[in-house]
Length: 248
Image 1 (cartoon, one colour):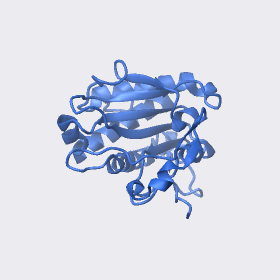
Image 2 (cartoon, rainbow, N blue to C red):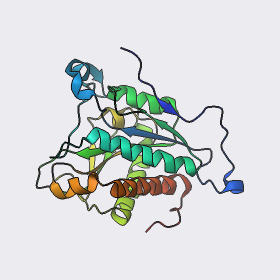
Image 3 (tube, rainbow, N blue to C red):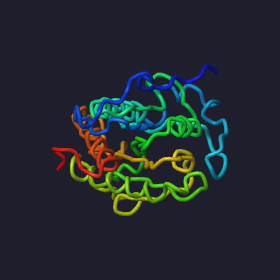
Image 4 (tube, rainbow, N blue to C red):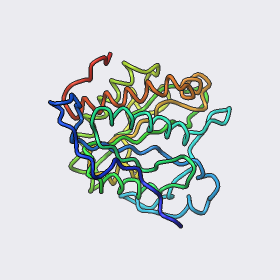
């Protein structure tokens, strides 16, 4: 199978001085993993190949979920990721994404972790939407548990997760999940992206696609941009110690 293209900022571009141009993330590297991919559903054999997730073997990837109208999680994840990438670049960051389109396969979850680890990102975010019960609403921040490779970044990941949580409550229309985790948080030890990370990282389930009210929000371009801005605010807060201007 042909290799998956990975989106990087130009390696020849030099970070702009934050002091000179006000780019608060100049010199920083941010990783973004938009979960799943648009053609994952076309190749079950690809998805079920086994990879090591830091503790045990698991499937390479899944198709992700979708709304009742058929709007896919893969598309949502990628749209928010590209919106976030654009904002981060304006802030001066170099951005690395695990996939640069929504019309391919994978990459597998272990490969996604390695792409961001090899980029030596300062912080990374895994973007998802949930496929929970139709009655459930809200977001959840998934945080890592020690699995060996990630041991040194557990505390920093928890801190970053708290900023994501705060920004989501302040700047998006979503409340904390009423069906998953506790008060909008859950710790997971079975996800490759969290087990295999060498930089601070959390996964955000932005809302619940099978729920009609959450689905209406998740498919709204306006709300998608709000989510991207909230994630950017959390990243800026984590990397600089300050919330960006205009954050609620």
